Image (cartoon, rainbow, N blue to C red; front, side, top):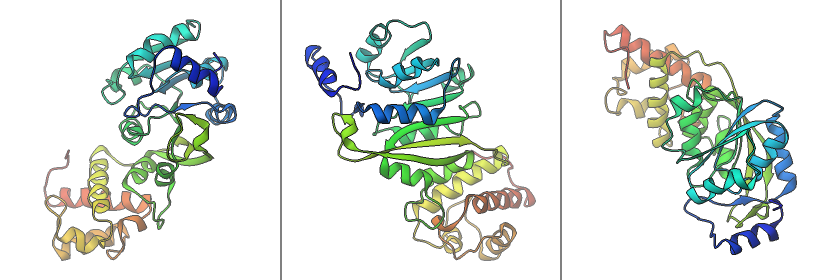
Length: 293
């Protein structure tokens, strides 16, 4: 079956009484140009170890194998998982795991070592999957993913943009996020209600300690929950352990070089990291717990 042929994909579904599940985000890629762009953006070559989440009918899987990659595909739909290897000729370079990506024991799987994650992520859980995977110390150094265009904008949004979000700030802590191209809804079947985008993430060094990372996540989570509030006023009224008296906050903001009148989306990731360090140091300076979480 030609997996980039809409008519053949539809015919297979009808013949096998298979109905794409909207809840699982089953919108299969059927566009040859987008397939090539995804493979090119990933830059995989012979011997590369690739993790794929949500392979569906296998269009990306087939493309990755054709470029010599060794693929581990994680598929929640047991019916699709059971047919994938056979449909692609049972290649020895393919391993299929019938599992929910939100419940996978990532410590064990990622310990095998992957060079990249290349996926058409399910719309419904794509952000959750990335936020689970990307911060992991054993996560692949490269992610190339198809997501909703609005989600891609949030991932890549710089400070000051309306689309700046907690998810984007968290991803940008460990990865540079580069939008590759927009993808029309007509490139998928069933056709989704929104356009998609192809995004590449490249790992970058992060100097935060484990304790500082906890502060980074706690501060940004709380700030983006109240994104219209100025940070100084917000943290004066925040519950422990974030809340501080005005004088103590002034010292922390000065130490971090952050304007207390700024709002969450206005800070750069460097400023958020500085603020996290200041809070961590402030706790240590007061004799508080150095490790939280």
